[in-house]
Length: 359
Length: 250
Image (cartoon, rainbow over all chains, first blue to last red; front, side, top):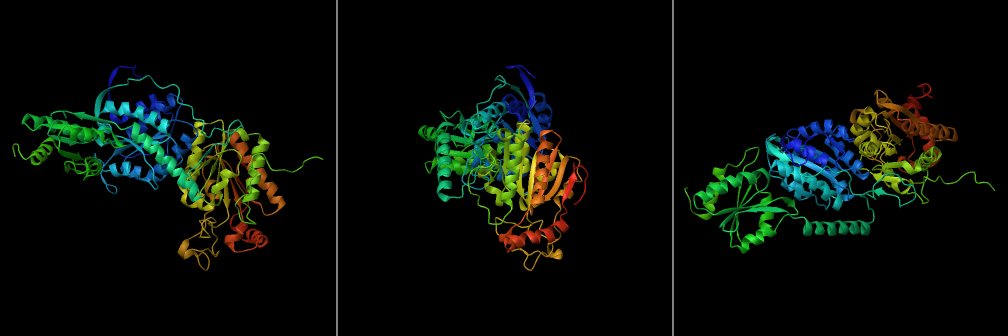
């Protein structure tokens, strides 16, 4: 494998897989679905080399439950899938969240609903950030926009999962999974993972029995458990909001976008500036917890217009509206079903929003 | 005075929630005795199901993991693959294993996962109140099979031990019952063989235990035992199907 600091050309899916191995992931279970197949394929070769385990499960349902067991037993573990497969995993994700276990779940989103298609989409934002499965729980959701960021955020995903004993989702899309870019593995491979005294490793009487569980039949106890989870989510909200901004200082309008779409917005921003529309970009990196600070900053800088651009019909839009809370105008432009917004189309929406330009 | 009979170390000292006359208690005890006798309490991890045994994590005095409905074999697979030198068992009912969890049990078996499955078959959904199970006998009444299970409406009951015996992954599969002392002794022998199979690294092991459910069958305990002996064993013959001295039916 490549040395630390060396640049190599990698496909997004393979970069995530290698980053996971380097982050100490030693258990992967998955099931084939396009467009994420390179992740299990890579893992099926690579994990055995480092003494880990790869299992091609009989279904996504089984795969996520294998993770539930492997995580309970103390391993750093990951699964990956794409939209319909992620839907199948939701019950297991809820159990993992309820039992407070770390796990990393990758969604290389494709168009939906139903069987949908295999082209890129961002239409699983609601599913990722608003629950997905049953019960009151939260996933930490990371939204990379480049292959390099997929590498960096994968390492972060494992660290956050362990730190908060909470599942973390890497929300990508078919473009990020399939595209190739030069990447650098900046960190040394993780040799030792944090201790997990709660893991079911066998009870010899030297500690209380460890029980991995999310069942609380007494309502008082279940409420207490929920309040504990909520306190943890507050802590995550306080510590883990991440975002990037471009050219806000002199901007009159902010494009708001995540993942692949944020890169298209960058081209649109440059075109807009070339014709005198001062556009900037707010790019959430954590979709949950949603970063509200850059919106406060933008409003303080006098930016009153926001154009949200997504590959869906307005999902992150709702979080942006909550953050802006009536203090500015929030417009939306989206394509979906595997169709992508073009820089020209975004530019046109910007012109409409600011009321000038080459229309 | 010499103590000749006591609670196994691998059972906790708490009253169980099981109904009077239910055979879960006997089966729990047999599993715990086997864990004690093999000296593996400190390296055993149990996986509890959804169903009547959902609270088994309170009763087995080992590290425990509560699975979602039907997925215990997948959870056990995850644990065993991460900790291959530990002993991992699941304890599942017939709704859990033979209905919602058929994919998981079949594939854990065919992968030859080195886990032990205790499959308690009482031919009914107990915890939810007596609905038809995949193992409910033809003609047997259930709250969702009023007047008894009819083939034209609900098809036939599943024979799990026989079905899994067609696969190459299992190293030991047996069906036993616990309706009298002789059968209890045989059941314990089978459970011990199953755990020993795992310790020897031979492959997947499963013991199906025919069990009574007096509450949901609507019978006094003694009558339930008689009903099991007269009806269930005819459809679900006892014996070792894989890995026995001879794969014979008794």
